[in-house]
Length: 242
Image (cartoon, rainbow, N blue to C red; front, side, top):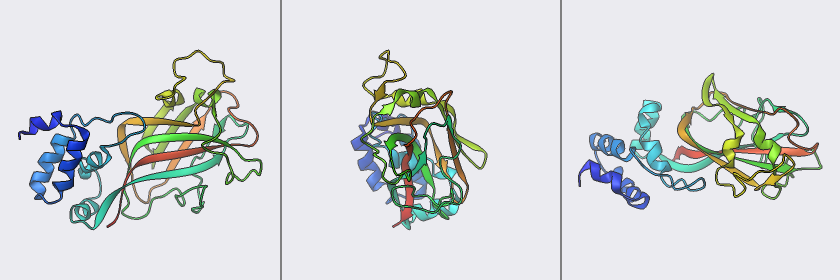
């Protein structure tokens, strides 16, 4: 099989090849990774069948020590997410999607102090937002996955940075309309949409270990009600101990 022939393979076939990749010598791995990185399709906004190949194709972008441990089998690649729940209320901005000096807390966040652990590299490939209501004002009891997202939420902007490096640069939240059945339909700002909204990144970026992750959302007017919360999920692939 020539390298050009790889571009004609299905996602399943490419993943079968990837399952054998670790048995090849490093030189051949580099050649095959390069071929797989060209034209690997992602079928839609909820299926990320090529996440492993996307990570492997970018091994030269991470710490060489960690890359070597991945190749040696000390680390495995896993589907993962970074999530955080923050108050929205009637504010026109969320200045800190990943609160500083906050420990991990089940249902509220799975990242501590805005940082990933040592040697953990997370390839960000998609972002999901959910909207919830919690009368207790804690966020822990919010009805995420059940509340429909108000159209006003989509009229804002989102930005993610890490140590001054842009992961997403002032992206219109209208991009989250992708894959939502009401997209393209003329509606008023009082309308609501699906309970979950996902945006796939055309340019996946690594979230580095031990560097502060920061994010913000802004609107021209209040997007929620007094007891409303936003849950943000950063979806991707991460290295974990094998």
